Image (cartoon, rainbow, N blue to C red):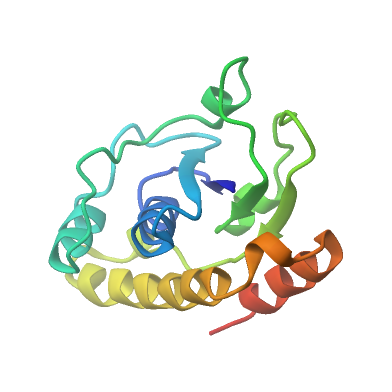
Length: 158
């Protein structure tokens, strides 16, 4: 299953969820992330926290969602937005008909620098709970309607 995680800047939340899905997915999913207006660099606190938690984020980069709407890009099965602005934007046309889900999380990058650690940990913890709940599903056996309902339920997890 190919999953695209979207956020406006693609520097924090989407990078965290992409890494969590790939790390915990054990090859069951291929997660990617992108932004509608990418920041151009991954937020340093994202990289610090991911390294502290034992994740390899060496390939993480801030990129445009246009990269995934071109010929030859991986075909997405699921598109997850993690910020309200990306959820409300008109997305490019993705090849195929991927499911869409919104798993909104407050932007830790918007916190004042002294509050980064707490803000990023909160975002990480929420996204990890959702990633693990998603990966606990029998993805290979779910019909589209059941998966859609599960995605909504997971997006409401605190």
